[in-house]
Length: 557
Ligand SMILES: Cc1ncc(C[n+]2csc(CCOP(=O)(O)OP(=O)(O)O)c2C)c(N)n1
Ligand SMILES: [Mg+2]
Image (cartoon, rainbow, N blue to C red; front, side, top):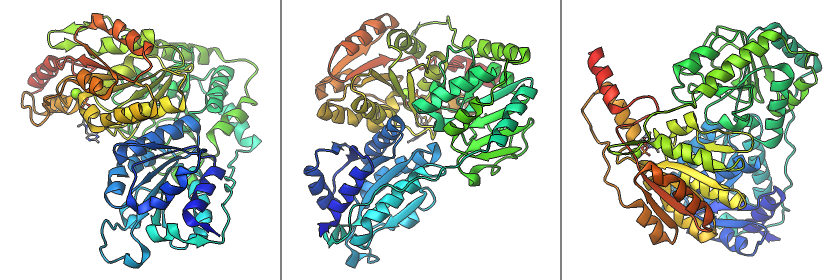
């Protein structure tokens, strides 16, 4: 007979789990006790449960396995909820283990008791509370299965404290085979014929292709069919941005040149994306509920196909296997029309990266300069994490991704993802350079995980856009309520000194001319670093300055 907590850990090992992220709690002491004796599972102790959750999500992206986090009951679970929401929006497999009050005290408003089924029911794919220790291994295997099958997403497993300490006669559970959804040869042949018959076909690629086989298959299909590839939001790295088939990144408020160019498509093949409102620029392309062009939609879950908009051909199939299969149906030669169309779109997408505007303004560095410096200096294998905020608009516009350079960001727009994701990426790939772009707002949400980086030996480079403002919201204020600034100004600490206080390298950058040296120093050190860039608020976004926004508003009034 084994203690339930140990059966749980043995089951995790059988599922390939080699790292878990946590904030400890007295509600799952026996799991912590079991992990202490398990060299096969690294335990990363975080400073906030949102950090632990975000690190697990980044790890899932990097390993193509579910991310795993352990948090305490009640308050710990509530702090982790942002990661549950992000996993749901991003279709990232995530298994969150939460302590629970002892079984005899359930439904008595016990200390830190939460009804997880009701709290997480609308976000998670499955919420389960395990009351019988003998069933724990099988339920954990089912949780991993649920997190990965169909539309990947979050699963919550609540663990009553006393249950974990009980012994049970069960054995650890093996992983359950995942169902394989496939497309028939005739369906693949029909897709190939539709691409050949279209004049301006477009492939929109999404997050389920974010793994080496997925990216290889995407490139193969783009080349074999001459079909240009635009990527869903936060996935600009699926195809090298310098590849002639790269047709742009459908990010928040994509520039009009890009959105109007791709809207000329006469066939859309969406693969591994749910075509959410950001990627589709507010459900305009492909439009919902009725797209203007035929839509072929490939996603491993029938419940998501045809749910928001009409889908002419819905294929319930693993997106990577789909592309690998489609490759076999490639035409003997690529029609001239496809080549012209592809060249046109690639020209538009590449043109957006050209910028010769100011690098410095009176109130600080134009953040474009910081992004261009990272783009210039970092190599092809760098991992770039992006928090949410207007500074990210420059990253999406000016950085080259793909070809090995990875983009990790939350499409839910959750602030606070960037720093934990960078710590997690640096732990998973100690040999690769990791840079996080984060605002002064986001940095003070989860920048405390710099302490986790120091504790674990991770060495991310954190580039902070210090514009003294929740700039994104200030931008919206200037559009809707010009010159009426409310609740968006920030008084910041000295971020470089915060870094030094942690024992990390802290560098303050006041002028764009200092950026290259700062980055080289950060790359040379074996410690984490913070490059605090005094950032212009006037240059509030990649699209307009505050002055321009105010002038536009006064013209419109
Ligand atoms: C957790 C969370 N809280 C609030 C928001 C709303 N929000 C979006 S961007 C933003 C401001 C971001 O400020 P900062 O990190 O300084 O970046 P900036 O926009 O100034 O470049 C806020 C408050 C959010 N997306 N996520
Ligand atoms: Mg800011």
